[in-house]
Image (cartoon, rainbow, N blue to C red):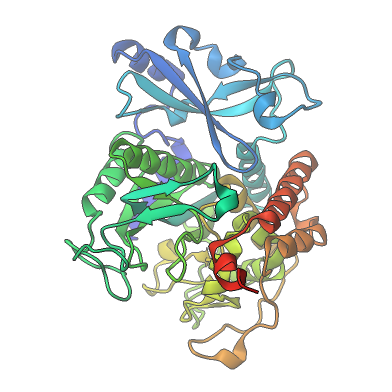
Amino acid sequence: MDRTVFETYLFLYISKNTGGFLSAIDDVMKYIATNEVRWIDLQFFDVKGKMHRITVSNRKLGEASFGNGIYAAELSEVFGKNEQGELILLPDPDTLARIPWEPASVRLICDVVVALKKERYLKDPRYVAERMETNLSAAGIKNSLIGTEVSCYLLDTATADKKNRARGVGVLMDSREATWGPSPLSNDGSGAFVATPHDSMYSARNQICETMEDNFGMLIDSHRHGSSPTAQQTFELSPRGLKTAGDAVNTLKFITKNLATAVNAAATFMPYPIEGEAGNGMDVSVSLWKTSENNIFYDGKESYGQLSQTGRYFIGGLLEHAGAVSLFTAPTPNSYKRLSMKNFAVGWSVTDSNALVRVPHTKKNVKEVKRITYQGADPSANPYLANAIVCAAGLDGIKNKIDPGDPVETDSKKKRVEKDLPDSLYEAIAELESDTKFLKGVVPSELLGDYLDTKLRQHKESLRGISGLELQKYFNV
C-alpha cells in the first residue's frame, strides 16, 4: 500500500464516509426524496453476528429518526428479555446504500438503543466495537485500521434433507469445479490463483466486488480463487476503522449470499464445508496509529520485519490470550475442524505462514504497510466481536509488556510454542472462563453471559448430531 492509498483509507475512516457517498443526515434525506426510494431496510445484528432486518416505509424515516431512533418491531424476539427496557433502532447515516437487486430500497445499518434513556443496548455487538475504539483512544491510539481477508465457497447447488435427518446426513453440494464432478473445469490439486475457465466464478467475484464498491462504497483491494480446488473465493477488504470493518464483512456476506441466491447458486461462509479441502478463513490485520505519521508497530531500525517493541508486545497479548480469543474468532463447533486442518503454531513469524500471528514484510522502510495479522479467525465469527477481542488481547499485551518469545521460522518444527489452540468449542469456553480480565471495559457482562450460554448450547447440539463420517466409520461396529 503506497502512501497515497493509505491516506485515502485514513480519510475514509476519519470522515466516517463508510457509505461511500453520503454522511450528513440532510444528504441522506435528500437522496431518499429524489431517488424514488420507497423502502428503508433497517439492518442490525444479534450476539452471534446474524443479520436481522426490518423494512419500513420512507414515511417513517425523518431527520429526527437519526437522534430518536425508530420503533418498528419487538426486538426482544431477537435479543430476549432485557432489564434495560424497550429497544429501538438508531440508523447510522454513514451506512446508507442503494440495494441494486431491490431498486426501490436502501439499507441503513442500525445501532440498538434503549428507547426511554436513549442509551446503548449492552448486547449490541456494534457497541462492543465502539467500546474497543474508546479503549484504544484512551491508550493514545488516534486511529485503528483493520484489514480483513475473507474466504467463502460459491457452489452451483446445495440441498439439505432436513425432514429425514434421522435417516442419515442428507446434504448434497455440487460445483462445476469439484474434483468429484463430471465437468472438465474441475481443478486438480490446489485451486490457488487458477485462471479462467477453471476459475469459473471469476465474473461472479467481479460482480460482488463492484457491488461492494459502487453501491455500498466499500473498497476491495483484491480478489482471487481460493486454495481449495472447488469454487473457493477469497476477498481482501481494504483497511477500515474497527467498527466499520465489521460493517464491511457483514455487507460482503449480505451481497454474496443475495447475488448467489438470485441465480439459484449457493454461497457458504461455513469454516469447513468440504472434507479434505481448505476451510474458509477470515484473517484480521491490525495497524494502530498515534498520529497519521506514527504507526506504533513500525520500527525502521529493527532487523526482523521492522516490527517495533510495541508491536511485539501486541503479539504477546494475542498469544497469551489465544485460547480465550478463539471463542470469539472460531465460534462454532465446525470452526475447530478447520483449525485442526490448519494446525497453526501458536507463535509469530515473518516467514512461516503457519504461525498463528503473521507480520507481513513485503516492503522495507514503509510504515504504512506495517501490520499484524491474526490468522485464527473464520467467517462464522461476529466480526464486530472478533475485531474487538483481537485488539483487546493485543492492547493487554502492550499494557503489560507481554513478551511473545522468539519468532517461529519456516520449517522449524522444533521451535513450536508449547501452547496449543483449543481442540473444540468446549475447550475454548473453558479457556475464556479462566481468562476474562483482558475483556474488562470492552465486553459487557450481559453480552458475555449470553454469548457463553449460546456457545455451550452449540457445543451440546454438536454432541447430539450424527455426521456422515460417523455413519461410515461406526455403522457396523
